[in-house]
Every structure is written in C-alpha cells, then in structure tokens.
Image 1 (cartoon, rainbow, N blue to C red):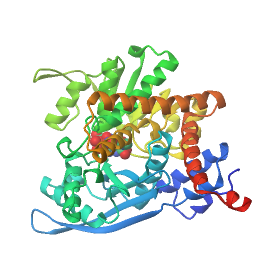
Image 2: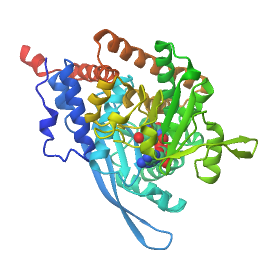
Image 3: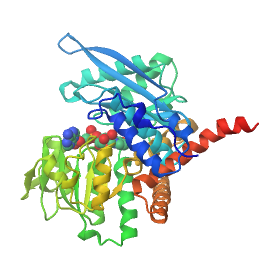
Amino acid sequence: MTTKVDLKDQHSEREMDNDLLADALVRLSTIAKHLNISSHTLQALSQPLCTLTSYISIRKDNGESAYFKAYRCRYNSLLGPTKGGIRFHPSVDQSEVEALALWMTLKCAAVNVPFGGAKGGISVNAKSLSALELERLSRSYVRAMADFIGPQTDIPAPDMYTNERVMGWMMDEYETIKRVKAPDVITGKPLVFGGSVGRTGATGTGAFLCIEALAKKRNWQKHKQTVAVQGFGNGGAQCALLLQKAGYKVVAVSDSKGAIYSPEGLDILSILYEKQKSRQLKAVYCENSVCELVSHKVLTNEELLALDVDILIPAAVAGVITEANAGLVKAGTIVEIANGPVSAAADSILHEKGVFVIPDILANAGGVIVSYFEWCQNRQGELWSEEQVTTKLSDYIHKAFEQGWQRHVSTNIDMRDAIYAQALERLTLAIEAHGTHDYFNAN
Ligand code: NAD
C-alpha cells in the first residue's frame, strides 16, 4: 500500500526552524515517499503515544529552591517496552525529547532489538550544579516519573550529561519508591548494581564497527583515512580512540568550547588523560603521567565541520549540519554518533555532493544494543563476560549494516533511506501482526 499520510502536513503548524520533531517527521515522510511504506505505519508514527511533563524542584546547597522542566516521552511500543536515554541539557524541550524518542523507535527496529522508543530529559545546565544537587535532581526526576517508567513498560538509560552514577541514583530512588529490587528498570548503571560490562563504551564501539564495515566494502587503507570528531564525550572519545588504535588518522576533536586540529594526527589517549585531568582539550603526548604539549591549531566547532577530512563524526548535539552549512562539508563520509546532527533539509545537499552518511539510527545503536543485553542479564540474573558482550554487539551491528548495505547497493538508495526502510518494514510487520484494516475488511 502506498503512503497516504503526510506527516509534514500534520505538523505544518509547527515552527520548523527549531522544532526537532517536525524536522524528524519531514525526513520520515520524505523517505517513506521513496519507499513503499504502509500508511498504517506512518499513521502510527505520526504522534508520540504519551509524553509526561513535570515541573520538578530541588533544594540547592545554599538552601534556596530551584525548579526545572522535566520530560519523558514514550513514542511507540509496537516492538516492546520503550527504551531511551535521559539527557540533562539546557536545550531540552518537549519537541527535542519527542524527536529523540521517535529516533529510538526507528533505531531499535533497524537493529532488531525488541524495544519501542522513548526519551527523557531535564532542561538544566548540569555543569552549574554541585554533585549533591545533581543527585537531588536525579532523584526528583524519578519521583515525578516513577509511575511512567518500569522494567516492562519504559526503561531509561544515560544520554548527554548523564552517566552511570546518575543511573545508579535513579535506580535507587525507583527501588525506594516501589519497595522492590528492580535493576532492570534502568540500564547504563554501575556494574555493582547490575550494569553490563561494555555498556559505557558501547555507543562509540558500535560507530567504530560501522566504519570498519564500510572500510572493508571500500578497501580503505586505514592510515590514509583522516577523521574529525565533533564532541569528545562518551560516544565521540571512545570511537576516536578505537579508530586511532586501528590505524586511522584522527586529526581533529572538539568539545563545547572548541576544537583542536593537527594534520599529523592527534594522540587520543593523551588527550583523554588531559581532558580528565584539566577539563581541557589540548593536543598532548603523555608518557606515564608526564605530558608534553604538541603542536596543534585551535579551531571553532564550525571550522571542524568544514575540514578537508575523509570521515566526519558529529558526536555532540543535534542540528549542526543544516541547509546553511551542508555545502561547506568536504568529508566523503559522515558517521552520525549524535542523534539528528544533520537536518532533513541538509540531506539532499549532502546527497548531491555524494557524501555517504551512516545514519544515527545505525551508527549510534551500540548503546541501546548493549542496554538490551544489560536488561536481559538483569531479568535472567546473569552476568555476561566482556567477550560475550563484544561478540554479540558485533553480530548485531554487522547484521544491521550488511542488510542496509545490500539494500543501498541493490536499490541504489542512500544508506539512511536503506536503514529507515529496514526499520519501517519491521514496524509494519508488527502492525500487520495485530491485524490491519484490510485484514478485518476481508473477514
Ligand atoms: P557526553 O555528554 O558524554 O559528551 C558530549 C560532548 O559534546 C562533550 O564533549 C561536550 O563538551 C560536547 N558538546 C556539547 N555541546 C557541544 C556543541 N554545541 N558543539 C560541540 N561539542 C559540544 O554525551 P554522549 O553520551 O557522548 O552523547 C553525545 C551524542 O551522542 C548525543 O547526541 C547523544 O544523544 C548521542 N548518543 C549517545 C549515546 C550514549 O550511549 N552515550 C547513545 C546514542 C546516542
């Protein structure tokens, strides 16, 4: 059945420029038009199932109260309990959370993980809070959301500016409220609370595995491939580290303050060390605990995106490559570790330029895949070895990449469209398994 539902029209009243959900729906609608996607599927994805918003408060260290807007969206549960991270960032709003939850729905479907999609967040500058205030905020979030999340309904995880410690506080608060042990309510938690080995590095590792899969297809000589990474956080730093170890030349990395660039290649392990020690990005070379500054240029994040490199990895925030700057991109390959770093309007510009994009719903899926493994271990009372986790992660990523690649090659569509098709087909199967209008009419 061909598409009759126009998601663009349904959301035409939205302000497109800063509305991430509207942008996500435009892309979905555009891709669905190229593919033969059932109108039932598009209808099911046109709105979130439900979004809970709350105005939560904490007592600050100085005794004053502080208030924050908090969100949790369960976008779609066709394939299983909903799953998605919680982010602490000033840009968090309902539209961003809902777009991220839609992408989680597509991501789980694309890589064949039996979860629906969700996302949560608090509009806050986490860097402005003390550790104790951060703990109070994390617990306050769970008090607001405790009846909305749950091991068989909706399972949170970390995202930007949240980490395993935050997940540990959240799990503890949930267990206190519910008076049960429930490690399976949250993933990405500390190992000692039932976290999985390999979860912290899973997102960067998944992206690295995608690049390696592409390298094989293209017969790349790795030492000739230059890489720039925007966002030296959990996902970006791990991927940069693995790429350098595998022989690629990582020439630029950045954080929210700016980028560093050295055409000779950067030493990622030393930069990680320096970042942890001084909270700054500097091109250094360290031996034991002695570090030496090496020659490098300081760039802006915008300049990093326009560098003449082979592989560009946006691993920070959404919407950094838009209609306005897509023409400046010189990289031949973009690997989206961030969610939604390329706007829908930029897709066609990159296509025209022949840029190959490994889309976010595949490139950053390592995190949710290992989160799924963590949830399985918690529910079975098992602890898997690092080897088990790594082998299984690699299987999931390779299978999803290969299916997408075969479709990309055989039908001559972009890799993003191919991966979306994979996800939408799986969601369509779930809808059909429930029985469609046509099925009931035939009876
Ligand atoms: P993180 O908080 O560990 O790191 C984010 C990094 O981006 C930091 O280095 C920060 O300084 C930098 N940054 C922030 N704003 C920036 C800006 N405007 N320009 C350049 N750099 C900026 O976050 P993370 O967990 O690595 O997540 C990064 C991205 O990857 C997000 O879009 C997130 O949704 C996505 N992602 C993460 C996971 C995961 O498991 N961590 C999974 C899937 C997707």
